[in-house]
Image (cartoon, rainbow over all chains, first blue to last red):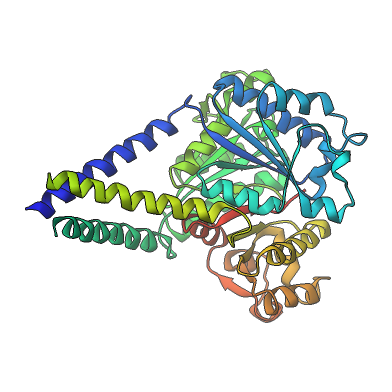
Length: 144
Length: 144
Length: 144
């Protein structure tokens, strides 16, 4: 009888969790999304910056992060990027995270001093993306 | 003792859930997959249409959805697409969902009347993809 | 009272699970990641092979798998690939899985005998990727 009560409790709890998940997936609820940028194509750079603006306009509580490795680094290297102002706006006004892979920086001999302001360094860009996915963030590969 | 019984109940319940998940991941069980299309490349358009056919052939209960934003819109604009018949077949015969981002439509000045029949509009294409991921759908970025 | 005890037990159990998940997402914990390769671009082939090396260097317990379909097959067809030695190293030394889609092989008239050694065949490449995602593996689309 106690076991039955306990199981009823568990089922009620799990149902509440399920309802919570359902509520989170109905738009325009806020969400969390990580963008995977390995391209230096201006169209892809422009696209990810536009998407951050657009999803924040849908719901300002939506959280965004851009992880850059491979050719994606070009977006956040001062003197190389053509989008410094847009990146600054995304970070400062829209609270987007821009995180660059330390391994890619080393491969491409990019020093911390060359990064745009407030770009963060993560030890392993792929690991960062996988961790975000496991934590329930959506994943979008930037490309066209 | 009652707590012990309760915990045993919880463990049994979670085990049952885990077994259910394991069963779902063994092929050729049906699955759910959302395709992210931001490309107007004919090879990518052709690929996603072929993949829908192929995964439905593996198991007709598999559910597919294509979310289009950015340059992906070209696939479902009448007069612009070269794949209208394939899209119609995917929607009508294979029960695939084709969903286009309202923000991208506005950006590109595409009106509802220009869409192929039975293409649905979602308010936020990225939000749609993230919601599907959170609901347990697999995610495939279309590209090559 | 028993129900309360049971619920406390459930909450403690779920907290332990949550802590376990949190521990798994902090770097440099090992992780599992599946790479989706549909490109025959030498830069993409080179990138995925380099990434396997790099994430294994961060933590040798990290598990990697490359699923190839579409144009991705070129990487593992003997006589066509330019990366046979790197693929062999990834499989033999780094214990990466290389899995190719049987549907794509049939479409492209590729026979089992043409594959590089130890490349595995899966019935449905997209199904393989979706199954991995459902099993908690991270997903990375290879592209640039």
